[in-house]
Image (cartoon, rainbow, N blue to C red; front, side):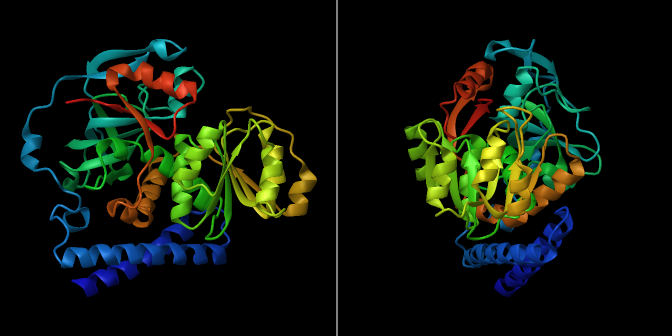
Length: 411
């Protein structure tokens, strides 16, 4: 069994290269080959340890690598589902008080989809923007807030792998997460291992998909490089720290207080800069000995963009994923030319199911072994019951949270 497992590891490394090579746009093929080989080897090492543990009888038979993540008997799915469910809706654009509980019919999974009995749902900045009326759901997506959930698959749509039935999963969705039941594309589901609680599982998909695709794909981050992240104690920020450290990056973050800077360092940031009391551009120059960082992950936009470019080293990459500080910026074109910089960015919610499915498959190969082993978990700030969604939004609006905020459905 062990030899077979090692062969599987080697095959996995090849798959990492193949998927990564195929999906990165405008790729530098030699660079991608180096990155994929390094990441593939890390995955092989982790999987090899897991397989040896299984072989020696040290792992529960319900371990995801033993039993494909199945931890619930199919008989449980024979129980009838309720006709209605509770969900959170925005009665109008505004503050947290506009979030109200509503009872509606259960959604029905379509072709390639599953129905999940939700145990926990992540709260994210895009939910706040939707509540404010500034980020409408894409066509075809539910108007219910919530972009990530964790729970049990209780119903399958057409053309869905039957082994998903009864499986505990977390899933990235385009909407509908703040509810007792949610529909998710089957390809965007990842198995929840015993190493995660459902609250932790619900806090993973949105930030994990976002950071992985932007830092490691669009940003070509490599072992030993330095990454600058703004909002170091946000959901995205804490995920960037943990994922960056896991894959050999030196992570510098900016935060709005000394307390948050200390929290970021405890999570794993090499350096944390209080942007309220220091000029982060000058601080980055000092920290890097004047060389600058290799990559900036920016959620601010506006006048931060030219300052970010001043922080970049030669051949640096700037990745924009949000515009909390403004939609427009003046760009120093000569700096881009002189340093040979790359400016890119992306949004995730409106991307196709096909794209997100490929990301999920890649994450299951590259990151999930570390999740299964317990080495990788999200930072949780606080959880709230579903009917206290307004309090959860007030918490994120206040900006004092460190890590993710999660809604729970209760018993």
